[in-house]
Image 1 (cartoon, rainbow, N blue to C red):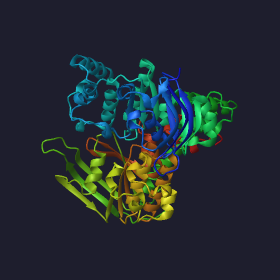
Image 2 (cartoon, rainbow, N blue to C red):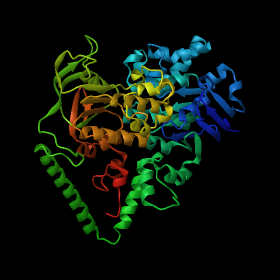
Image 3 (cartoon, rainbow, N blue to C red):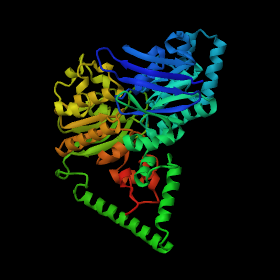
Image 4 (cartoon, helix red, strand yellow):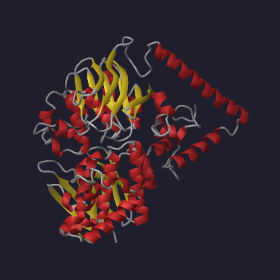
Length: 553
């Protein structure tokens, strides 16, 4: 018997058109299901309907059954215990000041004995390897640790199903991978049922049993992940993992055994390259590849030489006077507590006018702190910051920017064409807090970008955005830079940084290190690089994006 049965589910928020339309599907116990769709397609609304305590207010039609009974007829305890939920923002779910108390909080509310609580906490802490930070303050944890704590606290309740709403959107690539592997373990080792909404499908897609795809509230596909490739490659190729997209761009339907992960993708690509080279001698093949690599090295040297001479790279469409700086940082030091550790130390950095500079690094490394220092929200205790022009700042939490009762009021200074392009025109009458996470992110972005300023500081601007809106944002950033303004982007999204930044640096040990031209940065990294680069490294030279992979070259 199915664990969840959804029949003809239709839902509308008060005074609005339906955002879920005639949803029909069944979810079997022990399945891991990936929920895909553009921002605002209804993913979060659907997930919240599966957790009675979170069901949004509005008009609902149809039926949802959990374990054979209408979900709304179950007791509060059954819903709280049987169905766990992990939110998009790690900090939103934390309610106590200590890690151990966060784990105990839900158990205390269930009225469990001290002995039972200790047994459950001990088991979960050991499973997750959390012993070393069990007694730490929750506000001292990184984003990855906070999200792991949220998942652990949910597991202490021993649920049958876990719902995860874009749980890695604020995590760096390595923390996101570690978190999703924990989810995989829960499915494989505990037989847990998992529904996961996630934009990082490169990591999670190989783990899933089924895929669900929503568009404007309609369930356009629900089924096996292999079958999904045949459907989504036509209607939503961006929803597929990068490896599979490259495969579908080269192969022709029907797709018999599409690769989903890097290992499978590299085996497939090696086979294609070997077939292409079958009529060539091994010597000729090796010589040609060697020459290509030599040519790329030559181009890299020329690029470096051009850069030192003040010539702009190919991604730049305008000229800026050599040495004209928008930001100059010299020997900067900062700590949050008088006797605490330095979050920023010995930091020196120069960013030119008209440049888009990307800062990457792990959760808790201090990336947001640097933006707050540049925005004047924090003050260093040593060092100097010199800025040219008015500064605009986008916080990592979009809700920090909302002060009005309606979207239309928030966007009073924003061009109507831009509002339309970012998909917010039909949401003008809504309260900003009623929007989805991706819609809130777009609203905050447009509000900040609608102001006049020469220096834009953007903290995770691509967070929660689907590929379409990421591309619009990226093109907008390029237009802003082309006008001579400067953008500094803190981001965990490797692909976004690779496409739209001019230079990128890694924040490590309080300093920005490894700063270089964007292609050079990502072509030489092993972990902080694009999936396409990992797939093609050693097989095809210098590829960063799916559209660059062509075997007929």
